[in-house]
Length: 307
Image (cartoon, rainbow, N blue to C red; front, side, top):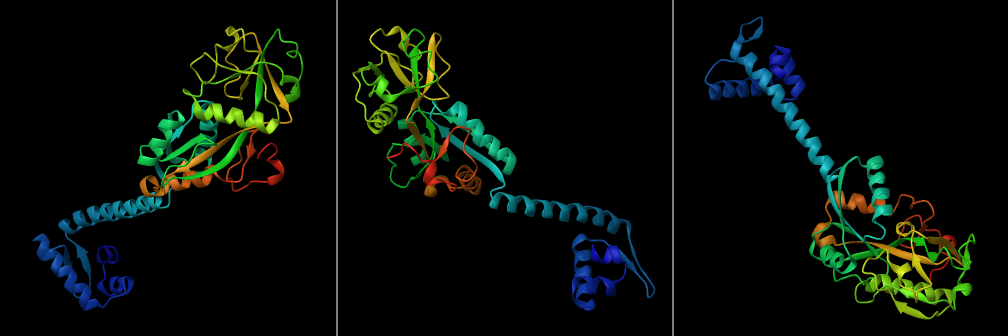
């Protein structure tokens, strides 16, 4: 390419930083390999044969492809492209999945996010065996061997009351006002982590209301108003709009539901997954949510309600 572009062996040798005899020998070897002259040489000038012109066009395309391949490999190695399989618990998927997807779109637009809704026990197995690259899980789950977990964000607890409840027309309620009201707790056999998280919130609030197990089999507890012995339930922003005839209120002092990021460095930490983890632990949490110690922008002053 250098000789065909310069049409001068001396200038081409200078460009390539080699001796002119070495360059001349390399061109002769190439011509023997091709089985045809590529250049015509006289004492005054060098010119391309038709075969040389054909090879020059193809050589330019080959070099361009090699350069593109090198750039593409470097982008993959730097975590700029790839696919990240994200497993996430259903109760926060409507909020956190779009949030982290938007962060990728802004900071790493060529990384594709494959979102999979999974309950905590399945999610733990998936992140441990590499079925998913990264998990967003309940904050109280225990990390399996080899899995790294960081509690990085929390959402404020909301309480749901029937619209006929004596406190339903308030702008908010205090925990103490609910202490004597019958609380509906998710099934510990169906949703052990969700149940534990709500029990921790009650402990932090210092109240121990009479409790019954919810009969509903979904985490959003959509059928709880039909359970006459239940007077209130705990919920989050992503689940709060699923029941009609229900008032959803903030509670004070604030209670928090914790969520953690999990990944297995030995199984799934591709450059794209590492980039995703770095972004998830760096970008702002959703509006109204609160950073936690695993988040790189954690501010202890904003961790109200954590023990």
